[in-house]
Image 1 (cartoon, rainbow, N blue to C red):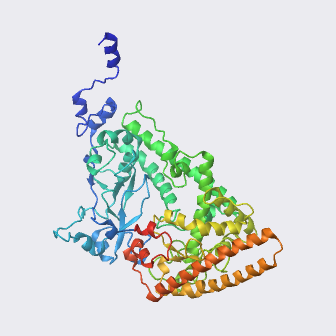
Image 2: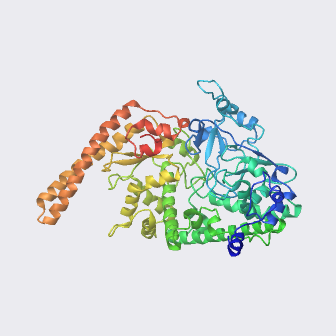
Image 3: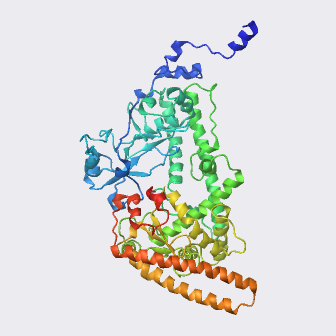
Length: 594
């Protein structure tokens, strides 16, 4: 090897002292770590300030876990502070931290766990062969305590949130503070850019277990804690408001388009004001996070190593299109999709009002427990501005066969909320927004027809995505020709629902289709235009297929209606959805059965 080759090779080598690596717990071979980063470990470790605990392994999540919206709210308890309080509540379902997506400061409150009677069933869940208890890691001394939870499995960035009144999973493990440090301070450290540099040194596999977090370098001068307090408090408040603005939060009140601070008679103006409000929140959230980064960078002596700036897609607000949709779309594409999604979410809220899940006159959930009725609704909202459907059966037909179908009810919802003066302009804006992303535009189509097409073809797909394949509005469908489809609200279903669906909708629709077919035949006979005759023949052929489909659906519906099927919401959507054969749409998607 020549002298020049030796010099060139030397450029690719880094000489480090083995003693330097020993400063990092576990002594990983961390070539990329600077002297300043390695020195941090000499000041102390996070284990000096907190207890990290691996979360529970249920051994059968499908048995013991539910998404929070699946079960009766009457059987849930959200605010237990201790095991005794939880047991005394006599409730079955309690919040369960399970990690979830990358989201800092607040959110990812998706799951409930069956902890009835102090978790008797789960603590005594045994293997049928060996008789040994299968579940483990209950951490009974820590459950329901205030702590910090984080995402164990990440794509390179972890995120931490305060955990309260909850039990925690091994994918959402938690830590509990001691020695005069606050949960907010530790959460801020984990979410900071400093830890983004350190985490890979501790766990190169990006699987952040409690033992990994305990090895993080940590020291918390009082001056740092005091400076962090108002900043972190503001960050949590913004994230909580954002999380609660969507139906996936159990604290959801109404569509943000109805907030008084952004409300105008024209929905377009409401959306414009809301978008401006969101931009301010995103900007402020980014500023707060960069201030937190600065505080840690300064306190940890890393000014020469790191800058406080963060990319926009790390501002984990749902209203932030860069976070929500990623970096692959153009600015214009993200803006179009955000507008389309926001108006689709307005329609979902409107469906909720039609079902009685929500009300314009009372915040939060109204009917959200098993078998509740219109009478239960009127007990809470005696004089509603927008009354819910009396049977929670909403037709989604591609033509107007019923005066109370979802399309007509949505039109009435818009009129009640925004008034009649700008009703057509508001319907136009909704339709135009849906065509930005949710559905493709169709030339010559009226706004109401566009809304009807969205409800008929796309709403349930969006609903499945929002509710993570555990829908609460179930789509009963006659088949691919869409002769008849309707939504039924799970929490208002009863043993007579299918019989009512048949007598009030399916049988009358059959008569309407027959009458319409006769009219089309008469029109065809009277037609003097070849083009018109061909169009009518095509429509008649489609109608005959729908008639045949509806007749077959009616027979199956009668069979299931006679069985008077009952549901137990504690069994979860996956089990209950499979009780109706192929009367329902997307059965494989929901149940997972082939």
